[in-house]
Length: 402
Image 1 (tube, rainbow, N blue to C red):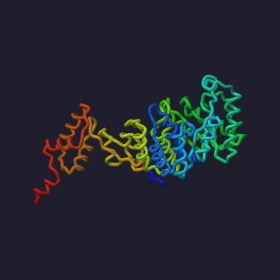
Image 2 (image 1 turned 60 degrees about the vertical axis):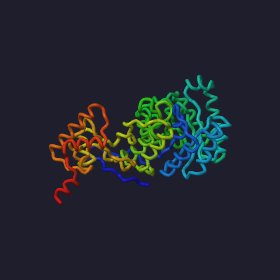
Image 3 (image 1 turned 180 degrees about the horizontal axis):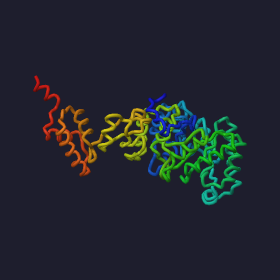
Image 4 (image 1 turned 30 degrees about the vertical axis):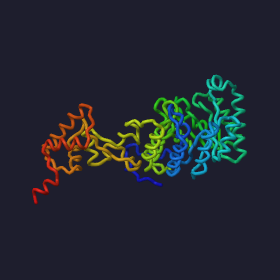
């Protein structure tokens, strides 16, 4: 479903939108997202979130880690059978993991192994040779069943470059379909990550996928840099939830591709706010007000200058290429310390009042004073301020004329 477009960039202002031709979305909310400390999705939670992701047109849904438990296996199996999109199951380079993923009926198996020396030695207690052998054997085990295989060299951004290329070439020769490059500990920067993906592309015929973490607040930027470098797909999570500081955000990545790069994802963006709210509720992780795209303040205005401009034309102090309607949200004019007369007049008219200029200024002073005390201003408060300033309602004026 194609969303309603916002305005085009103005000529001469970042109007180059030919960096990428396409971008696929691999959602890992139900797998990596659930690994957020304190988060646990129930069977019904997973089914509901997967259903929305499926309806929106998400290209791949990583439904979980099938070998983890019987309940997890059943959830993954049911999602695989009830959705029309590609469903993926995670598996270590261990036979029982691979078998569980295959038995769950997923269309894609995502197998992974650590490739950085620190993880090989201190987490796996293995050698580089053993890592390559396990990776190749696991890829072959999936490929021979005809199931799509994705392989991840975990901690790729902290892996010796020569060894990383050796692993990539080995699994490519084994017939892997997708190679995911994960920035497992969130240490990449956009320029470096872009160069890394370009180098990986030169050593494999497999399609490239990227998985970026937000430890330095660069996850979405790094994911986009990977796409610019020629990666076909990015792994993202709704509301950025995931290990530690989380993953690249589903909503940020999709809207950046759609609005900034002017490239179709095929995703119904008008359900993004709905999806975000459901994941917030089910994960128990509150979405910050200043969260891009889906935060309560994303399309809210309090400052007098900003509110006045938005009342005239929302493109004045909003991106223009992304509107609240495009993500299923609403624009809000918020009353507070920084509110100006334009916003107060607009809200009073909405409430049926017909204030004079002097009355608008009087009500605005009350709003500013009230907001300066860090108190939230409600509709009831605004009506009270208007009545105290003797502002007439339109209905009262009609009665007088009659």
